[in-house]
Image (tube, rainbow, N blue to C red; front, side, top):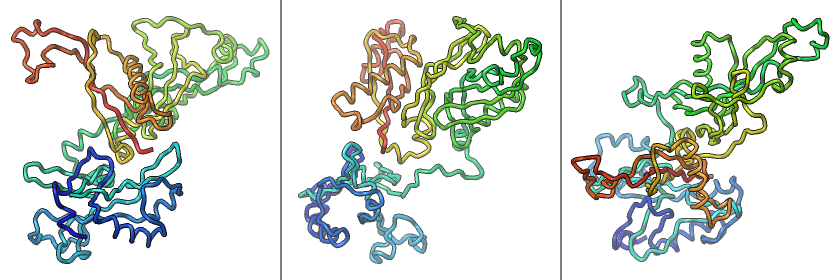
Length: 430
């Protein structure tokens, strides 16, 4: 390979905005020879159907990047144990960077066709582009002041160190749960057959109530889990011992032991037949009807909740829905699963920011995802409504359109034009 040609023109740039990697055309022939030795076929960009097992057998492409400073490092004896350095592979330049691109990064998968397509191209007559598929699995630092770029292999895992720094302490975020709603009442869970005789009206039956809580925020891995939060809140309220199960899809269920006599059990009937729906008052907010936070399994759930005549919030049976999502905890749990997060600012003339609610956000997410994917097949969608969150909804003022953001001395003269939304959309690796 002629290094002068390889780095000619603008040179080889590192561009996260370019999806694929483009290298000098002079490399095409020697690369094809090695590819044929390993795979038994010529290198091309035709889609191929291979199993995941065979995908892992494809070669890892290695690119050597010249070190910014060739001066021997005083820690050079650790070169062999430092991931991403050339070391003894090239004794003349042991401090050079070795950029490894595995097949899982350069072979693009099409879910609709079940095929993989190579996305490293040898087409450039001058220089080249190291695109985002080559940057995956690395922390990349663009040091603008010193005109250099740094690469470090990344596991995409948060490392907990002791003692904890202020930054790490700030990451101790506990799970946050919504208000509990009754899914299975005590009368639902007991055996009413034991109450056939009128003389048994005062007989006490033991059962298990099931209460459902929506996960509003799963918190961070270093904070209290949803199970721990549920049990702690129950203890603070001096409740009896209970069991908690969280499904990882945005729902936690609390199993509470209960007692009820036959008279009350018969009056309430199975599935709460003896109850009626009541309008919610300002003092009662059952919640429900909105999606949970995106949990670690990359799923979220929505249930419908109604206020009943017994003064309790009840989950409506048969109205539980689950959908995929790639925001919140999903992205934090495995950032490599969500390599791209797109931010957009949308301004809506005449809209009133103070009227924005959680349900407004969910309606917007549905419409936004549908609009972006309007001309795409469902299995080729860039993202779904579960991948969209509104980071902020605020008033859109005339001064916001000023390039310097200057506001009038009298803020009352700063005309409100509508509402502006800061929207975050996640594009995930499925």
